[in-house]
Image (cartoon, rainbow, N blue to C red; front, side):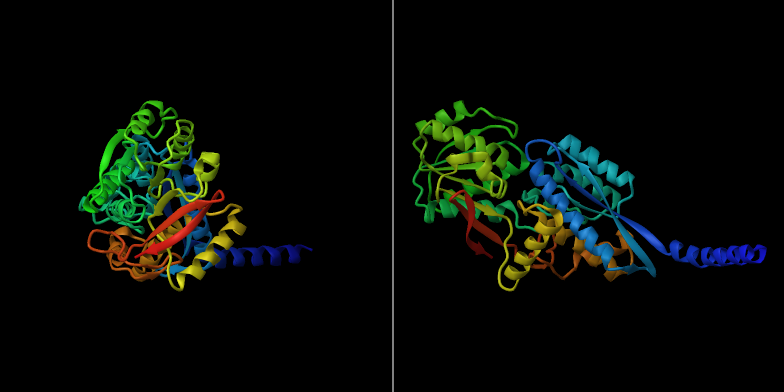
Length: 381
């Protein structure tokens, strides 16, 4: 009995001796994610977070080795509430936690101020959804995005309003956020470049619920097209109040309103083929099937449908790690040069960046809504 106990003790010590080096060879790599997890557009923030979680799960299943060590990826997720001050506080938390890369933020209004903190810390940041051109024009080598920007999106919608929808009198409303004002400004430029007429420009906030005053003013201008620069949480109630006031104009907006959640928010005020929006992204060619497969797997594994940018979050996370693999290092200083010249085949399409950190060959997808569902019209590349 005593001999057996001794043998067991020896076996246990040998097992520990062999397993300790193996454990020591596994490195935990922290990747940050930031989006509004509370507030009016929390549904979009949670959609983004789910895309990041799925990517991290897939990466950990792949048994990746970097720098001779097995790595385990850990997602540190922060809530910025779509608020610039909260956004910079969230960014500082991730910097202090020593993340090696960040996927986020969702909104331009939080992405832009946070980008300075990441730049100062030398931490690569890929936004999957911030579209204000200013983000990548600040000169930060750490700033990237995987979707088209407002110059492309707003301008395209502006020309579409005039050339395709035959808008003669166009009214514009925006929520004064970096995103909402930015996309509305670019839309106005597109309208004017196409020879259209802007009959009025009104302003609200991203927290507003009562639009009686501005919509009464808009109604007096008799527009045939109304453009809103902002998010779906405000666009839905605005559409309801437009219907109550008898404003029968076509309604347009950027990617912020172009969600699967909008029908619930707008109800029967959504209309049928009278609302048009564009998503700053879109798949073409062989990526159509890849996108379908991803969405089906996302639905199964995350128990939710893709609401907007989850596929781009997934790709952004994968791109960060692909750059680490190419550099054979998780040190931001070492893998940042690889990120800048990356060529990656994602679920949303081929990903590479220009000198500013913008995606090359960014696409836009035009949608309308019919029967309470979003319907793809065409992809513009």
